[in-house]
Amino acid sequence: MLSGLAPFFANGYFWHLPLIIVIVSLVYSATRHDDWKLIGVEAYRWGVRMVTFLGMIGLGLYVVTLFT
Image (tube, rainbow, N blue to C red):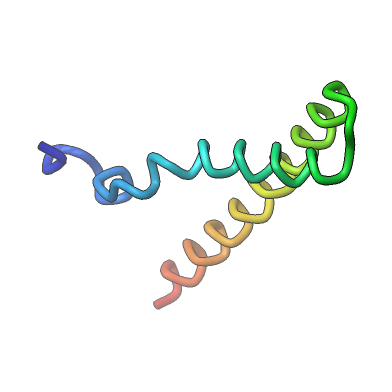
């Protein structure tokens, strides 16, 4: 079933990453704010921070694999 996919997408846990980022961002923001608008704004900010952080880690690992 997953044999035709690229190795990165063949692992099932990568498909859950966007959902986990959204849920963690919303829960963290809801612990800080009571207003839904503020929760949404803060969740968006945390989502961007997490995606950037994980992207930098992924890019760093990719660069390391180029030199090994």
